[in-house]
Length: 170
Image (cartoon, rainbow, N blue to C red):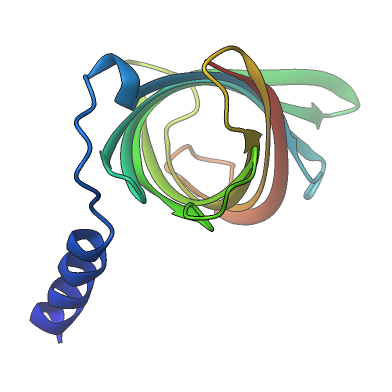
């Protein structure tokens, strides 16, 4: 089954390749976003993210992501927080890339793991849909998705929630 999925993925990517040379700079994009998830059991997640995207072929790209996550919660009627950095990467697929439109919609999958000696140790898994403008200058980006947090910190259970982030793409 794994070989079949790989073959289909390879076929889709090869069939989408146009014969047009692009430099590395033309295939590289940066994103800065800020987002928040839905409150769950008194916990409100907030994150700030930097992403470096590199196009592999016209419909697929990989990215490296660095996130600063803040977990707001109430402990014995006192508002407090945990924070930590995460690093990881993912894969993005451009939908409707062949259409002549200035709008773009992508599907993204991402995995992050906490970095260093943070108080909140976790793995994060995201699936999202992102909208942005096709531009060589700055453009807005809006991302809606589902995030599963696999917490390794005592006192915080694993959970999944919907999230939204907004930012800039260059």
